[in-house]
Image 1 (cartoon, rainbow, N blue to C red):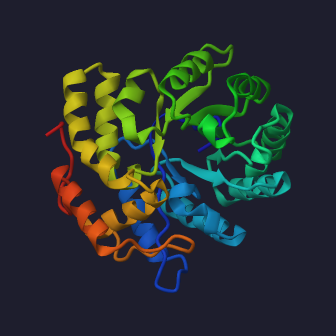
Image 2: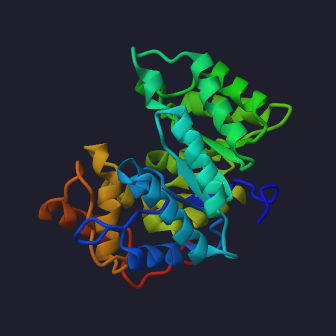
Image 3: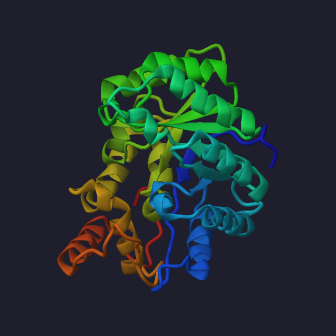
Length: 319
């Protein structure tokens, strides 16, 4: 797939990264997970090396191998988006260049955490960081927009400047966590001379987010419920609110399962969910994350049952 063909829209699950008991990448389990996601009808791309894949713990070589495996497993089925997660600009550029060589079709660019030192972001630093990444590769970029309260979010004026100055920015993954600002992002980015798409990652209020006019979603929850996400997105696109509400009622227990406090464990919980659903053999995580206690795992299982998600279920026609 050429870079011009990759259009970041629709449902893009962010895959998990299975590890074995020695905390090495479990390639067999990873391939199975990727194949499961690529096999969901109407999934439009898959993202690897994101938060859901515990990218903070992956070495440069592991990130490259992750992309290579994913490229081999999903080639010809769906496009592949690779995360670029680094505080240092030169390292981010090195990862971006590597990802292009390894076979990614697009890049999810995380903000540099260095920009939060002192609690206030300098727009010129963000422009320099993103600009360098844009110059290092021809791949389309998706900017990860964090909540403003985190110190990592781009102020709206900065976000608009980034999207205007760097044409390779095709979309944002919006996690601003503010409904009012989220709607402004959608309206302002769609209104640019070269419109930029908005992919929501507000999985805790996905239906509300989608009806504001998002172009799709990019979420770690898609590692477990991609079929439900596709059904919800399509219902919203067809303005079928009754069906959308019915699907959202099934998604809601998974929100309670994955996105309770502490939020740090959301992807940890998703791994445990895949074990309960017989889609992973084990839910190993790398430190500083630690395995969940039995009562929480049982709670996840109960909520999956409430959502009518079992090892054998396939979601069809809003049933």
